[in-house]
Length: 329
Ligand code: PBG
Image (tube, rainbow, N blue to C red; front, side, top):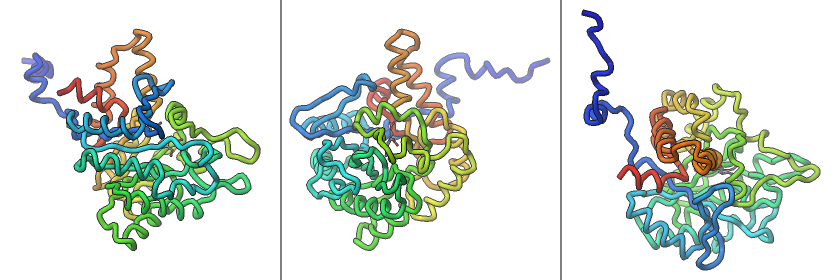
């Protein structure tokens, strides 16, 4: 009578497969990253991210209405800052009338229920393309976290629901939480990029914002003194637990696909929501292979998103959000 158990019984047809399916992605899982630029009626395709665009505020307004109608309920805002506004201090990041602050208000006016998350980091504002203030060839930690806290406050004042520091300075969550509490922004949440690796998959994003580290004397060539070494696993847990102690409401692993072991470790180690960022390079790889006709775009996209959720992600920041939601609904 062998075998008593035949695993194929529960795979016989799509109905039974859907009955026993363990992981299902839905619009509720997604955070939509959006790139904003100055101007009117501007929709610029990002060279290394086919099908993804930088939008001016008027088109941002249209876009978020469309996203909302598709069931997508949170956006993560990034701004492209013009060269002459960049410095080594993040001054423009604190401008109450800056592009980020206006973007937040634009989204909130267009769709008040849309959750607005904002990128908190200095690289789009840095003339050196780094996430911190630089002196003597080093990225300064504590001077940077002080600005990041002010930046969070500025975003909260403009109406952000969740501030999302993507910089990897030490102690920034505590600085941000403390200032937000002091200023009465008790309900502004923090989503910390807590295990963010020094990855080669961020290239297309740096094209999108023109934010790559500049090649100059005494400027670090990469972000390895603050972002994590891809070889490390235990350190990711340590980083994440520290951010939770400092007051993070949501933690994040970034990038996605190459780091799913970390996602599972962290999902098992913490009891708050875990986000995963499927980054620009992951998007670009699928687009490029599909363009060549080498992979089935939609199938690979859904497989990767499902894998990220199966690994333990409670939410996924993904440039595929809109396409995926159109397919699954
Ligand atoms: C920088 C930042 C990066 C991304 C989000 N915030 C790039 C970097 O760290 O250099 C990458 C996102 C992506 O590649 O999609 N603070």
